Image (cartoon, rainbow, N blue to C red; front, side):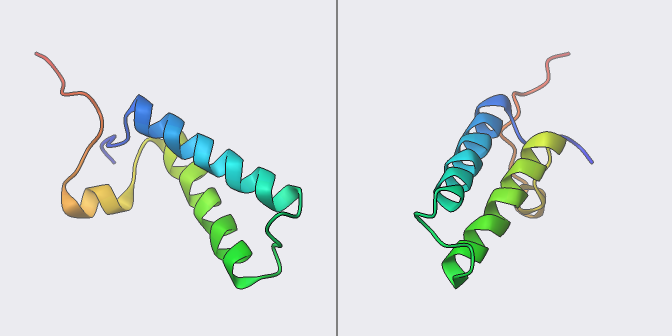
Length: 71
């Protein structure tokens, strides 16, 4: 897998995942609700894609937020 998630994108994904986790942990959004479950899944996906620096959706559409490699 070629990296397609850049540093800024990675930080945004981790920040959004942290905010969702805080909202779920404090009970602002209940995990037992549909929206809570969906947000939890999104948070897990964001953390995973940030850690592996690869996003399947980016790969499907040919997008990348990584800086261009210079030779």
